[in-house]
Image (cartoon, one colour):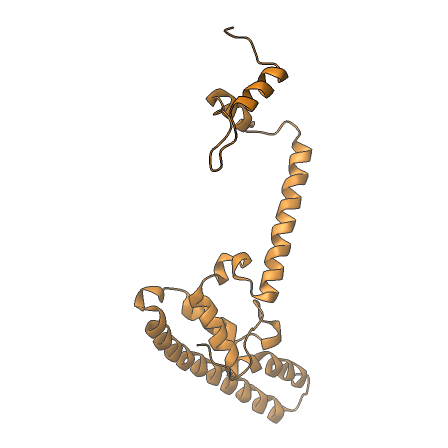
Length: 193
């Protein structure tokens, strides 16, 4: 009758009458109100402490995935700053070459150690050497970016070479190769294709 819910026997009898067809849904379409009720969730969780714990766990897992991607180079989980084929090409190009900027930190450590020496001539020579290395690193970074930009335009087109890529490439040249993140995936001298 109308409004009477079907019992288990009725449902089994009905299922026996209709054979299952391959590729068909083989079940009645659910009612809209039932689907909407199943999707409803409160805007603010009632148990805020549990929600905070769940959120913290999800954030921690995402950070671990991102950290692992920085080591392995997994493109799917890299941060937005490092995603994309253009930035991958930039990283590979910078990592494949020797950069003067890589030597800035070791030179600065030597300068710091020699700054304690109270001999004016040594201090003058060290100061001049620091400025020469800094100037050489700036020139090397500028020339590297010009060559890299030409390759990027040839490979990806002028539309893909946007703002911020020069700073991305140059800042990577000033980092020690071992401390770069994402980790270098190419050996020195192995130019990207």
